[in-house]
Image (cartoon, rainbow, N blue to C red; front, side):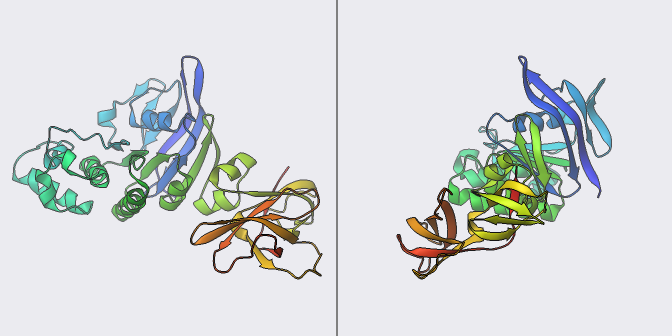
Length: 349
């Protein structure tokens, strides 16, 4: 794996409060890595340290094999060959779109060569070259973010940094814009680091996801890996809804109120808590005579259009569990259902 940037032992405190605590991270060349975490966990500070907007208390940052920050070394932000796109795009309101993009061009910013390069960059971010004469206030939020991206790409950066780039957009526009930006960066082969508090966003656009808590990473891996095989309960709950059920593990199988469920990784035998995702469960109507393991009663139903959330009481001392399944003819409230489990689970102790 070729690495475009490396962070080692990076630490930062403000006023005695530790914000980053010995962060290590490698950014594979040409891939997108997303850092996801709640507000105040340190993800934006990490981005600013890599960009050169802040100096670390300890640790180092290497970009394309060159150390840009470390003991006795600090390369200014404008010399790091890094592109940066902020939440609001940060376009200059008094300049046209073309002038905003040309501002990012190294060397000449005027003349025919600059105009041609601006037109190319606008086409790269799926905007008509005619947009060059418009002012930022004449653009939609999604268009402004694309212009900000074009300005950042103008310098042909070795690393692109995106700080909550879609946060200011409404839900529908956010989804379409992030998809377009992700495709653009992937096709251009630009190594990208994006920070967000939106778990779905992180998993949909990134090749790798790093979950941050209190200035440290709890887990770094592919979106599928961190979602399906979280290393701890915090990571599991932060990335999506969970179903937790007491169990006893024997030889890689968890015995619980839902029946026998394989666990991955197998772990050690003994008492534990089984974690499943709601979409791994399916409730199907059961006859009154069925009393075996895995039968419960629907106590609530929430229609969500494509899906329906069923709250099912499995009986005994186990708390009601949530099942997410398709909304076509779901079991009604007060119906006894058999709960089928798809795939394997994860156990925590």
